[in-house]
Image (cartoon, rainbow, N blue to C red; front, side, top):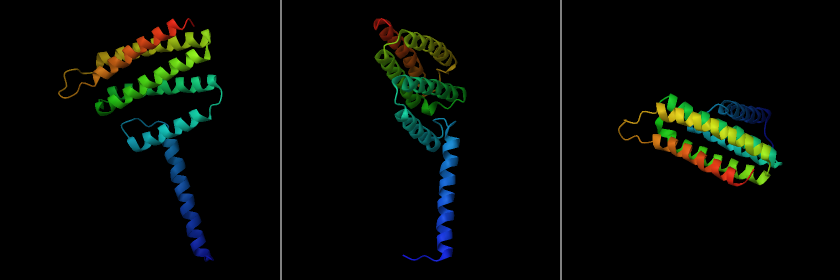
Length: 167
């Protein structure tokens, strides 16, 4: 297929524009919250790819811990901005990731890492308790505050699991 110079130039410019838009979306998605689904979805895909690229269990756990801190920040932003629509999915992402962090911590079998994970969970419990305290519980058709309490309770279960592992 023989394309003229003008068509080739248009194809190249279109390809450059698409790549530029994709690159900008990746950059902007870094700080995306669940309240903006298109960029947040891109952020989650990017996180999953980065997690898959971590080959050592310690590196995976460190990245998962970073993500767990991000998930807590997302929950906090949703509550502070009174954007309660996304509390349930954000809460589920938080608690399931906290469970994965617990399982990875136990699998690595390091007392030092377990101690750090326990400290982080205690700090997160305090933050979740603070979110629970400020969440308005008298809004009609809004009982999402229960999910924040569930996250707090899950952390208690995960702390017990870590204690029972004797690490």
